[in-house]
Every structure is written in C-alpha cells, then in structure tokens.
Length: 354
Ligand SMILES: Cc1ncc(COP(=O)(O)O)c(C=O)c1O
Image (tube, rainbow, N blue to C red; front, side, top):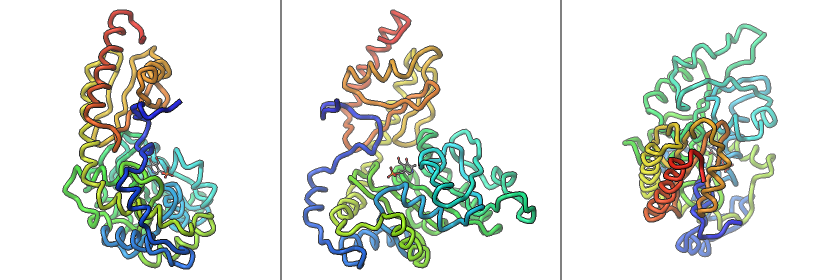
C-alpha cells in the first residue's frame, strides 16, 4: 500500500499537483475545446509554440498520444522509422507504430541512446529496391529514459537534421524530459524548435502537472495532428483545468529541475561506493540506473527498500531505476543514503541483502 510517507523513486510521473498549481487549475477559464473555445488550452498551446519558436502546438492527454500522432503523420503504412532500441516509442507504446501507423521500425543498438548521422547511414534502405520498406523518419529521445537519462550532444542532432534534409526524412523528438536536458546545457527551446519537424514534450513528468503533453510543429502539421487526435479519441472538451496546470508547470517548474538532476547525480555517486552494486550508468539528469552484482535478485532489493519506505522499479537483467522529482527533497536523499548504507553493511557481513 502506498502512503505519503513513502519516498517514491519509481518515476517522475508520480508527482501530485502542488497547492499553487491546484489554485491555478481552480482559476482556469474553460470552454468546449472541440470548438476551440477553451481559453486555457489555447493559452497553453500558444505559450508552448512561442517558447519553442514553432508555429503551433496541440495539447494531448499523454506523451504516448503526442508521439503516436507524430509517427502517424510522418509515415504511411509500409514505411520505416529509425530509432534507438531503447526508445520509448519502440519499447513502451504497445507496438503503436505498427498498430496505429502500419510502419516498421529499424532499431539502432547504441551505448547510451544517442547516435550520429554516420551511425544511421547503414540502416537506411535503398529506396529503389522494392524488397525494403521505405525509410521515412528518424526519431530521437532527449533525455533517453531507458538508457539512464542521457542528454544528447546537440551537434548530433545537427548532423541528423542535415541527413534528414538530404534524404527527405522527417525528424521527430520525443522530449518527454527535454527540460531536464535544457537546464543542463546552454541550448534553448528555440534551438530545438529550429531543428525538428515535430517535438513532443510532457507536462506530467518532471514538470509536475497531473496530466498532459504537447505536440509542436508547423501550423499545417498541427492542423493535421488535430484530425488524428480526434480519431484517436483524444480531443478533450473542458480540459482547461488540466492545461492550466501545464501552463503553471512551464512557467514555474522548469528551473527547479536542476535540483532533481543534482539529487540523481548525488544518488548515483553514492551507489557507486556500495558493495552490492556492480555499476551505475553515468547520471546526466534525473534518472539513475544501476546494475546489481551477479546473483542478487532485483526483487530482493526492491522488497527491502519498500520495507524502508522507499519505492523503486526493476528494469530486468539485474537493473534497478531511481528517478528523482518534485517531491524528493535533499533530506530524503540523505535518508535514502542512510538506508542504503545499512543494506550495504548487512551485505558486507552476511554476503546477501537483508
Ligand atoms: C521518454 C518517454 N516518452 C514518452 C512517454 C509517454 O508518456 P505518457 O506516459 O504520458 O504516455 C514516456 C513516459 O514515461 C517517456 O518516458
């Protein structure tokens, strides 16, 4: 059972609206969004489009929906999408690329979720050979969730953009946690807006809104996206209450993400010194992924942590994930370290986790 006393490191999606966010929601001006009469949704979409210097934005219930709409618009059945093997669009969207778009996927095996134009070259099909699907889209993720929150080197995007221009491919960014990357680099949202054909950002992760994602693109792209959103059943009516939370998040919760990233880096360094930890994936942002020593079951560690009021998740193959967020304070990080220290001493004495 999950009580508030729990320190919940399972994901940054677990946050609940803070009091000022709830107040912003209560004051939302709403209307029927199918008639484009919801002032709060309109304001959020305009704010996000301006922030990224893109023509338009579309408020959707989830990041899965914004990604899937983009994939549908960039491809035709039989086309192919290139992405990293660990990409959310491939691993965690229920096979939506096949289901919604009838497209196939060419996965790249990368070390950290990032890749260069050169890495892609061998994976582009010869469009004159009728045996192959047509390569149509390159999709990237920043930060890379399953790879440990990696932040891309922006120059890799520049190279990929040039390749997309040369070959006529679309270029999509799953930026569910883009703001966790932005606070660590000197790149601005406009830099991203200038490079990508479509961008998905999530308001309900580190930014702390209860619901919502935005798809950004050209006016024509977003006009077409609205049609797909409707047929996916995702156009909401008086959802301005939710959009107001999203606008509050974009206006108040971006710079503080640096704190989450710092907390994660601190936990990563701490874990590196523990005997039961084999290795920690380099921590760039708010995600910490670490491998347990051979023979230690992930479920054992998760159970012990839960007994100590700490929730985390396993990612298969001896891998554990901690994610920091809005509700994780420095004091909690200290508490987590103390509890990990006890588990470590017991492991040292008994050769097993207790
Ligand atoms: C990288 C990435 N993209 C997309 C999504 C999908 O977001 P949602 O859960 O809102 O569908 C997630 C969710 O965790 C994610 O981590």
